[in-house]
Length: 587
Image (cartoon, one colour):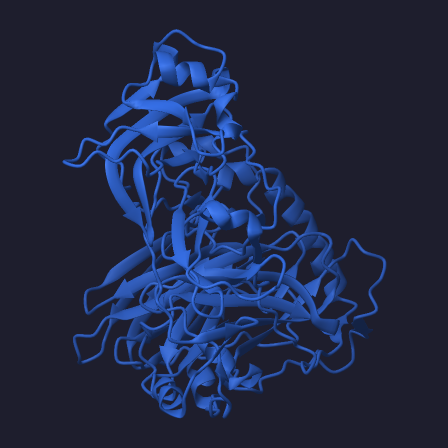
């Protein structure tokens, strides 16, 4: 059976001109109208300010309206980066926002050096106000496996305590709050025992509260406090947008990608050229756009898709005379950031090595506690009602696709075009017979314009052929039917010869996950009896909605004794920040 695919339609008619990832507005009135759009700010709740390689950084993104602190519905994409000294970027993630909320995680590999890093969050719209408007949090990463520890300063045990920065709106621990009832069933727990956490909104208003919770061991040296929602809002300073005519457009509907089509000889921009973007794999996407007067085209990808390699190509007979350019991923220069030495006591070294050993055990048994990816419901593709689906295993196999089309597929054939090249045709059952318009031809989601690439292709590598006979439109392009080829191993390679076509890897949003929760209930206690449990992160729940009804969260302690901090961060529907911290002991 043909795998579920997604094709969506997007056509952008622009009144704006794009250059190097930014947008130049035509007139002052248009510029003023963009300044009237609500500004945004981003807060990130992250699980720790001090980590060892081999651990995960978990984070939740809250995108807020700047003036009201309510969750923003403007941007649909947020960017999260972990940056070190000398503009060293450890990771850059795209996070899909739903009503201003999103989350992600990052496993810290052994290649990351010890030092001070900053976790940074922003939207594309926020770039108009400069880096000072970005969220910045401090994280210490320690790599005990590397010999170069120049970024760490070891101080004697009997000296003053390692400094902990509480500036920039970072607050010390407090359990006082006015909005949420927050209590555990005990203060002390044994190993592998359940912890019950009760939560209830105590606001007078019937508002919903969205928050995230982290439960983590506190034995690592803390050079910095974790940023908290209440302190973030208290310290936030609004900046005016740039006073020039160049702005970054907000990503209102999804991911924005753009490029330009030029004449191959003159290098002049070509307008009214159709450009297609397609991805290969399950839930593939196909979008067609049109160039504006400056030869610029846009793609706005609204659907989730884990595939990061796409094929972009100019459509039409004159494509061989075109040159295709795609804008590079927009880069942020963080050369103004300052980074400090990491200070630890010699006594802390034992705790660091103990944690690193625990991490090795946890990673060795990671499959036993694996997170799962949340599969989103996909929009129905245009060919939901295929005219016919041919699973070739149900028929006599023929060596080539040309023979297969002749012998098996009804209402489709191959003929020569005016240049003497073979092309596929699909019968039109409409009132007016169309013998000119070509069908859409896809192989594993990749759009194939040069049909000759498929005519002599080995049909024994094809799993199925889907036939769609109706005329349809994708963006500005009209097709007479479609032939949808699916290979057995998804190993078809479309030719990328020519300046009109290119393969490009794009930064795509992280898939949303359901994070694993360890349980020792009933038969699970026996299942995990012989499996070591050295978790220092007992719980991470990034998305909880709370009303005035009480809810109870249950999680289990591990084999690691010590003090654990329960951290709750979030915002009410009316924009009030919630920051609660509480500690429990595991003996």
